[in-house]
Length: 326
Image (cartoon, rainbow, N blue to C red):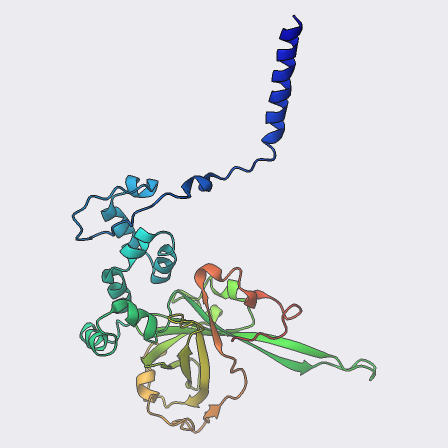
């Protein structure tokens, strides 16, 4: 009888130790992978005749043709993030078909024949290298220029003279067809992004025009509606913080000048074709002089649409009085 009680006590003590130990032993299933050799996974369309068994569940559930079709619907920057998932996706995304479609959409104004000439002469036939190295305007978001200046306030009892920091934004949205939209407003990025499109009403004060891209230079113009037609012209230089980013635009010149009534028929006309060879101080309406603006020339920063809600440019001046684009 005593031995039975001793055995029960020993089992209870062992069980209590196991219960206590499970709180201290960390579960690390990836330790089971140490020492396991994993073969490279053949990409879609590979010429290899060896059968490859893919251990990944998603690759066993989806055929390669379906994965290829999903990748073909992705944006180029999403493809870049997907290429970091695994080796097979990286090999598959290097297929030139994805980058050829992206390049032809980005530079559709140039024309297919001219794009193929540039591909062979400058980028050794690599569509991916062309996408990363050739300057282009991005169409998946907004270019935003945040400008601030100090305005003197009204003196109180001649003792203090307050000052106010005024903040306003310049917004640019480009389209692959050669059209663009412009807005000058004090509204934050997350508010303007909702109606920055061609469906905007007159009350939204969104103006549309045309632009051209030559190497890394962008020239754009649109017509201000009103009793005295005024042309808004801007010259920009594209650059990027990393290769292929194209997420900065330096504002080289901003000019407003007059145009005669006989030269334009409406705000939807391609006004850039009328003024592209004008001098900066040239005007065709004596009532509207040419003015070269020297303020509000902060570089434009690109913000993708998926980041407009969380961008730091939404911060008020109380929390960020000045922003350095970089």
